[in-house]
Image (cartoon, rainbow, N blue to C red; front, side, top):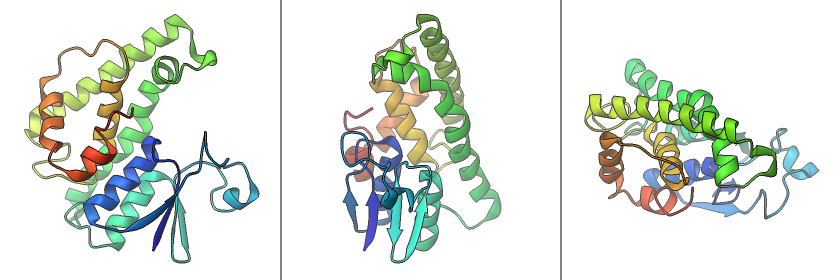
Length: 207
């Protein structure tokens, strides 16, 4: 059975858990990370040299990096309905998956650590305000894309790209800041509400 190493409160672990829900894929999960077993031990570092969650074991195969994991699971377990084989359609998914990791994550990092994690090292008011403004700029990009598609982030159908994007939007809503008016964003989250994976692993009160 697929093994997932990482605490369920981690946004990156929740990407993997939600993907498993969409694929109807059974798994076993072990708590690793802050508040649980430390990842800075030889047995974990042997699996992921970055000492970060999530890590999966699928038989003898080991993989880390959440976006790589969800792509692998969709490819391995008949997930073409999530991650199309057509190169153009797949590229549309990939651009939003990669953008979430490279751009959107960077935008909210300081504000989230300050306002939710209450990190003593992230309490510079000017930096918090800058991060909040940058976050709002990136959220506006998502809102415009959703207004354009009228449905999901990469097009008319739910795809693998919606998992990291929706989790980031949830983090936006769960962080105590001014959220502004993004109607397409709100409609999108309502559109996702019937999905069991969304309810359990995304919009569940966890930022």
